[in-house]
Image 1 (tube, rainbow, N blue to C red):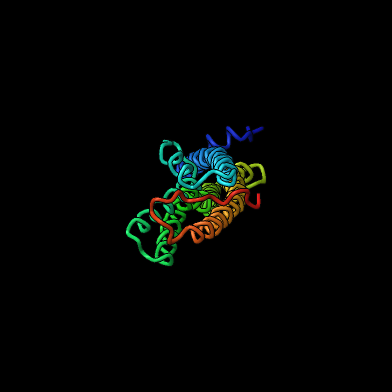
Image 2 (cartoon, rainbow, N blue to C red):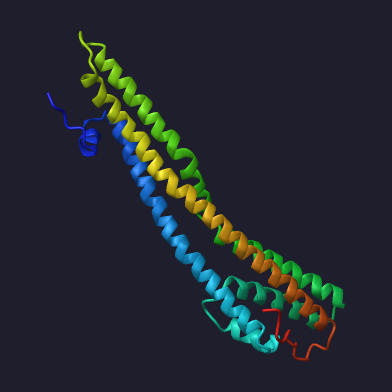
Length: 236
């Protein structure tokens, strides 16, 4: 007899354990794609907002004016929040009339702490993609092993075993591995791409911290009522 070996039929004919494995992998794949699309648009928004603020930072405006503009905004970029934390700490220490080294060290520590917080937010859900990429094939393999075991147990009751009787059970089991790979491969590609993009963003933020620290070093120790000058036209 001709048997229906379509994907839908194989899934419906699979054992309960294999069907549960397939359902879990499909849900995991949907969650993975949700994270991927969210990350694509999120990282693009972070890059664009950072670049916009960086252009404004090097436009020649004074740091005092720039700080006022940043603190009045509700939606700020990671680079803006790092800038604001550094300026806030620098101004606080300058009002206390500490020495120039203490002002610069305090501002640098505040920016480093803010940088780590921003990086944690940017890297959110990246570990989920790594887990999906590494675990999904093994979950699919578990479904395959269970399905093949179930198929051979059923075949043991038959007096005559042919390829036609063996093929459907094995095909049902192999669908689980296929779904596991379908969930894992996009997660692997996306994880590698996002990890590279996040590294670039981290380098950009660290470079900004160093450049901003150099500007603060030139302004450290000046009178607390003096407007803090910016860096002018920078290297960008």
